[in-house]
Amino acid sequence: MAEDEINEIRALLSAKPRPVGWGERRARIEEVGSVWPVADDILLAPAEVDGCAAEWSLAPGADPSRVLLFFHGGGYCSGSIVSHRRMVTEAGRAARARTLALAFRLAPEHPFPAAYDDTLAAWRYLRAQGIEANRIAVGGDSAGGGLSLALALRLRDMGEPSPGCLWLCSPWTDLTMSGDTLATKDAVDPLIHKDYLEELANAYVPAGVDRKDPRVSPLYADLEGLPPTLVQVGSAEGLLSDSTRFAAAAGAANAPVTLEIWPHMIHAWMMWNARLADGRRALQNAGAFIRARSSA
Image (cartoon, rainbow, N blue to C red):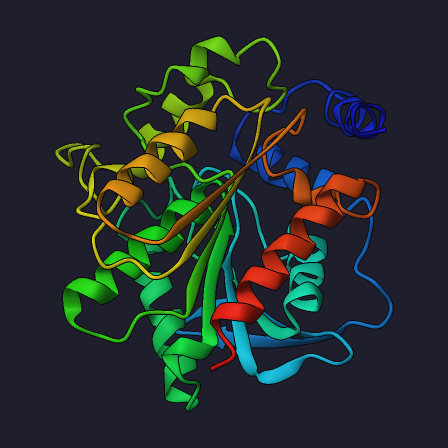
């Protein structure tokens, strides 16, 4: 069943030629991400965070005093509120929390540290509304997972209260691309390939910035003091080793980390939860994790 369903998603992703250019790529991720729309019972409301568009969502029965702050994937160069709306809103339902999705500034027009700074602005936006730090979960997929980690590390280094927890979906933690699964999983990953990641990293990281800088590659950070973290990754991902190496490093630093590796799943498979039972199950697991750690 899981393989049949993920093959349907693979067919969706391969239905058109791979897009070329930033405009085409941005349009394509919105197309494939929003093919199944948000559920009818979700309440959406626009917001603005320091000049960036954002969007609130609220599912029936959710506690509006608890928030999932979500940063979308797309390699720092694409992705949007639209492309990830179904994933974010269903995560909020599972967590029984409000969500705030941020449309952070994209490279190459806005390279590092634009997105990195936008995440801090979003955190401060929530805190200014009186939301307690431990009632905020921070999460994201792919590049958004890297941004979530970078924000948590920045807050720790600033001496500010930490989020209640982190939720990292197929996170991109190493922009040096040194993970071995970029080679060993290349033939089975329909989305992530090393040459494509190199193009994204070149667009995001300015010349003169070391790609091992923990602000862009949190795998190389001192991970001590991170909040409880759930990492969910598929077995058919080129970025699998970004998750496994991060989880090992976090555990070695005594950071509480839970790693889930989902058989047959591809990069950020939760985006297609409307048609993918394992996408719904992953969101349920994430929701339970968030509820248990952001309800005090």
